[in-house]
Image (cartoon, rainbow, N blue to C red; front, side, top):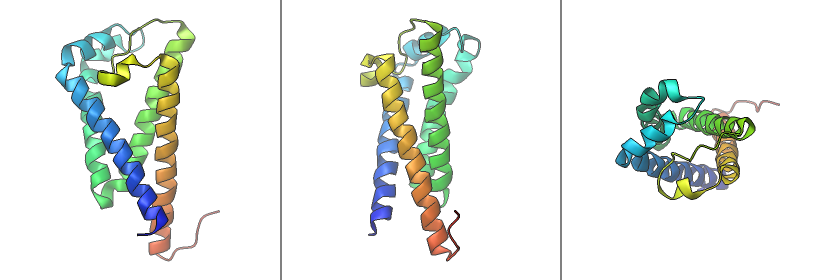
Length: 147
């Protein structure tokens, strides 16, 4: 197995572990997750939708990462979702809101600053996975690399 293939697999496995864990804890503790979302000044009006959409998205992305033909799309979706979470947390910090984390499980014990670092690491991982997957597709199709 080439190093880039191994790197793509490791990145996908890490994202899958994160999303399966996060979605499962949110769904198992749905009441507290939903309540936490209603406490946010930014997303309270759509908390009911997000309480189902976020874990469903995490599980959908997991499925995409498991299917080779959908892997690149899954990496893009992971990038967007994790970047969205990071922007949301940054907005919370900048607004001075003191809202408890509604992530669930061990992730809820992290500070908001730790969440930004953690999420940013997964944004970078997703971005690197996108780069490697696109490079792999170009190589396998014998297409010239884009500058």
